[in-house]
Length: 132
Image (cartoon, rainbow, N blue to C red):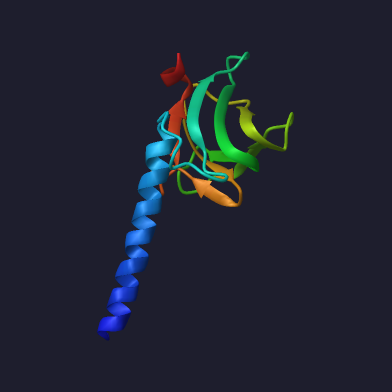
């Protein structure tokens, strides 16, 4: 491989790692908004819903974005989708996951502005019992 290709590959890799670090830092609830832009989710929170078998996922974005949650009980097969039925495109997002079983772990990613966000490329996880 030529030196030019190695430099290009290295530059792309550094950019991707830098973008991932910014997202992970912001998704964990940092109050420093200088590095958040566009549809990148920040201040992500999970809480029990009104029903014993519901979970509410909230997050914010700097711009109005279409956001939804892709989830499931198998990390390798997220086959369910839940959207915010109040506001399809917004800066404040709230999604309710329903009919969840208390005996299972669930995995999810936030899809915002056409990109999926988790934790370093891995879906986030929770169980109903962990939210009590």
